[in-house]
Image (cartoon, rainbow, N blue to C red; front, top):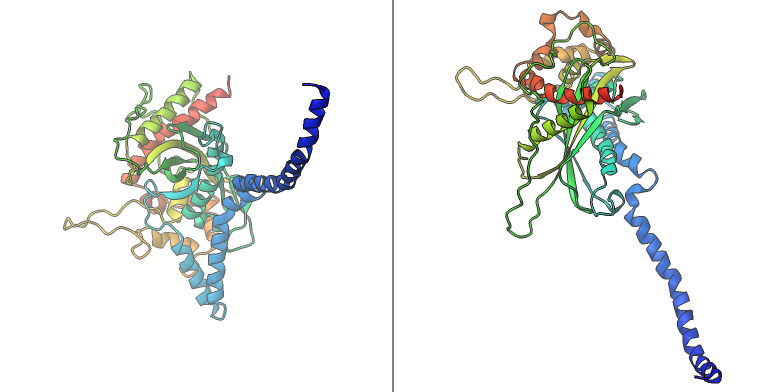
Length: 409
């Protein structure tokens, strides 16, 4: 084709191409605008302050509740106001709850910004979710402790719902994960938190990431090999001889034994925890995806508070014993409080003769001065709770032994 012929074709197509190009250029800004908007919406959970809102949302809710209580009693007498606030504190406390069988649920979704290129929830996103879940669990389980100005292991500082002093929740970086199954992108999932065990200083919070089984089809789900207890993890021995009884001295630093193979010990301990929890199916048939264990402690200022004292002060208790005639016992609750609750209220409840100062003094070391026969927290955490606590502690505490050994490498 000659040059003249090419020029002729170009002149013929020029008006057509020009009009099409103009249309594309006019349309492009609109497309780009919507693509940018879609990109921002897809990552809305990662916007500035979005994480802070999710973490502190339980605090906003409690502050709102407390404001309503004060508003309803604004024109009433001082004694009525004090009584109303005390009743509200009781209503948000886990009175009569079993400390080892009390679950807090945190529901969320594997959003696009939390997922990886494989279409699954990214491993790094589990820790971000745990920040919100642990914060919610801490406020739900230990409201009386935070009223006294206590703090425990969750990154951040927040105002309590009913006073101007700070509540600090700063979770120590002793969190271990065992990944069993992936969580698909956009799938809803739930974090179920509970207390696994405790000793004189540490309390171990166990979190289970679960998803609901698919309702599509009637195929039998594939059998997944569950982890088993490693042979070198003794769950029946007495490797850890911790006692629930509150000794008069508490070490503020852990001093674990020197492990011979720390990495293997930690791995085996994680597998043991996973095996123990995986062997117990969820009541609603949910699928266990991941297990997390957090090692935390309670503090008033720089003073360590025994977990047993904090648990009992918030209403946790061993279950009621069967009646003498053999009939089932009535579960403890706010309307039927456990036996130790009257003694606890005498320390922390203003209508019962207690006060915030008395509760602070108890947490700061006053518990040491209470005769052993009168330690109501020991009675509340005894019996079957003590047996289960010891059994769980042997496995959970071995996680700390393994990690501590890594420091010496």
